[in-house]
Image 1 (cartoon, rainbow, N blue to C red):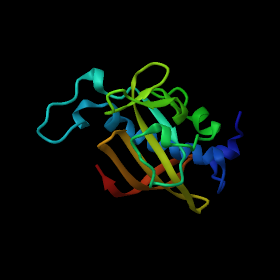
Image 2 (spheres, rainbow, N blue to C red):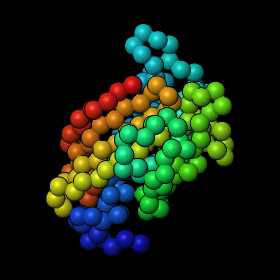
Image 3 (cartoon, one colour):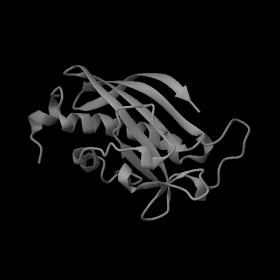
Length: 171
């Protein structure tokens, strides 16, 4: 059980608070990952429900230069605290260790269930102060489907709030 003081204030470098920041990003991205209205290019038909991600894989790789679409290239297993904080979300959140590439080569899948997934890779976490943090994040669901951006978050009233987002790539 976490003490009230740990939750109400933020401690620079705290794995718990970094996990909360990652969870904030995951919660923000879930609609674009699982909602068919966000999948595909404008004017295209939405992808059928059975083709929408049903699991999120978290990675913690320091380099955005790896091949994003191949889960086996990810070596940065997230800290266990990150996964604990994200348990109970509307779709399962698992370590990148459970992801694989589909036989067809077009999507990320869960090794255990075969469900389609999305990878959220945390490239870096930079603490600007005890209450300000930046996360460089990449998100991919397949070979030609991904984006990357820097999120700026502020700790306020016991939680992280996204106060800025700068996109740096879109595929």
